[in-house]
Image (tube, rainbow, N blue to C red; front, top):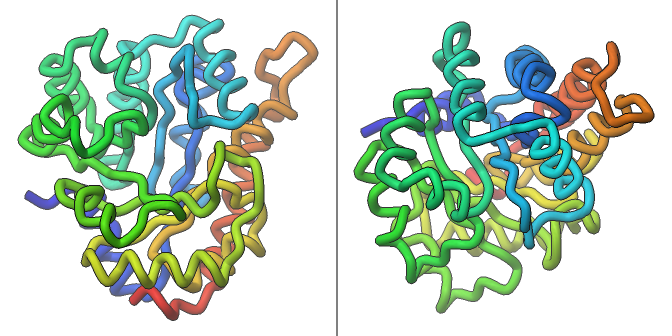
Amino acid sequence: MTTRIDQRFAALKSEGRAALVTFTMAGDPDTKTSLEILKALPKAGADVIELGMPFTDPMADGPAIQAGGLRALNAGQTMIKTLAMIRAFRKDDDATPIVLMGYYNPIYIYGVAKFLVDAKAAGVDGLIVVDLPPEEDEELCLPALKAGLNFIRLATPTTDDNRLPAVLANTSGFVYYVSITGITGSAAPDAAKVHAAVTRIKRHTKLPVAVGFGVRTAKQARAIAEGAEAVVVGSALVGALKDSLDKKGKATGKTVKAVTSLVAELAKGVRGAKQTAAK
């Protein structure tokens, strides 16, 4: 079965360019503003959208995304509201892939079987669940694949050639390469090291490789896009959103534009890259 993710990467490959994958937190700073941002992302230049599922204990996330999740939870965001946001988005956009990203706990509490049915019906295309290793595939990965959702795995600088086959075994859609060791948004990636890592991963899989963690500027995005099929930006977008809020942490007239302006800049960087290593 072909998903929107597969279709989007195939289309971009024929265009000869990398994808810009954007991450925002569902419900940050409130459900209404978050939905406005979600709807505006494709026009701003996002090719694939990752939507964070807010969680109280986000161990892999840096301060910016942790704060975004907390703002969302404090504003009353729930999984039900997150899926409703995606349904609302799908009324006007049936092409842009949406990946839900986060931790297993909120899905487990919702109920795995119910979640997969509801997520698929809402228009979700894939899942990134950072705290479920390949050894736990029967928990969620295999049921998700059976439900027609891509299950996207993370590979890191410490994932060696012995470990990669296990990581890639049931991965679909794309592989998410974490370009730095540590938490999200904590350091800038080294483009040369990233390109070498992507080349190594490509020896094990035909899937597109998306590179994330630490990309903040159009220049960085362009450098990464020259050797990967996609560039993921999250912390910088969540940070731009935070900087637009008022003193009480509420949305202002500048909030949506703060995110979409940065997305447009990053998209220019990605689209200006000359594809080399990854193809």
